[in-house]
Amino acid sequence: MSGKRPNFVFFIPDQLRADALGAFGNPHISTPHLDALAALGTRFDNAYVQHPVCSPSRASFLTGWYPHTQGHRTLTHLLKPWEPNLLRCLKEAGYHVAWPGMRGDTFAPGATELSVDEYGFGVPPTAFGGPAAPGDWPGGEEWARLHYRGRLPDDSERVSADEATIRTAVRWLEQPPEGPWALFVPLIAPHCPFEAEEPWFSLYDRATLPAPVPPAGAEGPEPAYMQAVRERFGIEDTTPEMWREVKATYYGMISRMDEQLGRLMAAVDGSGAGESTVTLFFADHGEYLGDYGLVEKWPSALHPCITRDPLVISGGGLPRGGRTDAMVELIDVLPTVLELAGVEAPHRHFGHSLVPLIHDTGREHREYAFTEGGFSTAEEPRFERAGFPYDLKAALQHERPELVGRAVAVRDREWTYVWRLYEPAELYHRPTDPDERVSLAGSPVHAHVEQRMNQALLRWLADTADVIPADEDPRYPSVDLPVPAGRAGPDGTVERASQQLARALARWKAAAGAR
Image (tube, one colour):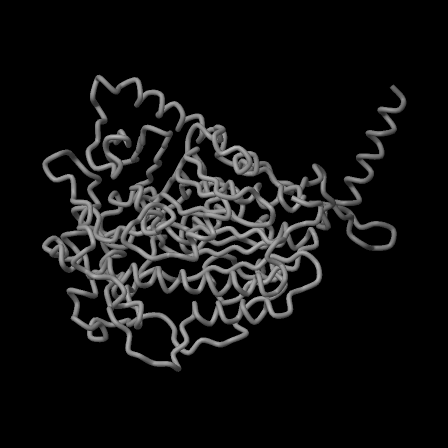
C-alpha cells in the first residue's frame, strides 16, 4: 500500500451465515457483488465470532476484547463512553467517521458522539421492524414461531431501514470528506423476520434447496436447550418443505443485501476513492435456519452455522484473490484496521493483525479460535424479557436458566471442544463431522484431545479475564471533605482532608531528605 492512509468501508450484515454465500462455497445462491469483492481481496474460511448474539459480538470486535473481559455479554450492556473502540480510535487519529442509519445496539449513551462525526438517516425510512402480534403474521402462529413472514407486498414507496441506510451512504459518497474517512454500515438483514419483496422473494426454487442438517437424534447427546426450544416453539414437526420455504426467503434477503453492497461499492468507485479504500465485509453471527430443527439463535449456541463468519477484506492496494483457512477471530479486525491506518491502539486488546496473513495466506495466524456465550443461573434476573415472537424464548430462559448456562467453544483446524457450565463437555472432529452433530467427548481414544483443548481454555480464561485500564489514578488523590473531629483554623474554617494530606506529605519529604 502507498504511504497515504486508506479509507475504510465496514459492511456488516446481521445474522448472516458464512455458508449462505457464493464466495464461501454455496452453489445455490446468487451473491455476485460479494463474490467480486472476495475475488479482489482475501477470504477467511475459518473466521469465528466471539459471541453468538448481536450486541456482545459488536462490542467484542469493536474493542478487541472478549465478551467476558469487561462484561459485555448481554443486549443491554453496551460500549461506554470511557471504553475504547475501533471507530473512536480512527476518529481521534484524524479520520472522518460516518455512520449512516441508526442501529442503537452498540453504544451506550454518549459513546456514539465520541466515536463518529456523523450519524443517522440522510434518506429517511418509511418502514420499521416486523409484526408484533400473532394475528399480524401471515400463516398464523405456526409460521410466526419460525420467524417467517414471507412475501412483502409490492410497494414502491416502502423504504426499509436498510435501504435508507444504503441510500444515505450512497448520497454521502457523492461528496466525501477530503481527508481519510471511515464509513460504518451495519445492516439489519438478513436477520429475521424472514421476509422479502419481489423479485427477491421468488428468486429461489424451493424444491432445489437442500434440507437442513438434522438433529443428532439417537447418534449422540445434544445440549439440552435444543430439544427444549423445539418443544416450547412447537416446531418439532416442521416439515422439510417449510424449512425450504424459510431458507429460500432468507436467501432472497441475502441477494437483496448483495445488491445493496453492489450499489455501495459502485458509489465508492464513483467517488474516485475506489483505489484507496479498504472494504471489510463480515457479520456479527449466523442463523440456525432449520439446522438441528432450530431457528434463529440462542445465547449459548456454538454451532458453526452460528459462529463461523464470512470475513472478507478487499481493496486499498491489498493482495487480490487470497484465501486462507488459518484460524481467525473477529476481534482481529481491530488491529488489522489500525495497522493499515497507521494508528496505535490506546488499550490492551486480544486481537492479532491480519495484515501479515493477507500478504501470506499460507502462514499460521492463531492456534485456537474462541467463542463464548450464556450466563450463570444467578444472573437470571438480568435476562432479557421480550415480546412476541421472542416471548417463548425469553420465558424459557427465565424458567430454566441452566439451559442458557455459560459455555465456551475452542476450535483449532481439526477439533471443536465445547465446555458448558451445567452440562457435559462436547468434542467434535470437524473433518468427519463438519456440522458438529455427534460428540466424541468421553471417548478414551480422544482423551488427549480433550485435555489439550481444556488446558487451552483455562490458559485463555486466565490471560483474558480482565485488562488494566489505560488511565492511571493517583495513589493519594486530593479529597475535599472535613477531617473527622477536626478543629477550626484561625480564619474559622474547618480543616479539610486535603490540607491534612499536604502537611503529612511535606513532613514525610522533609524527613526523607534528612536521612
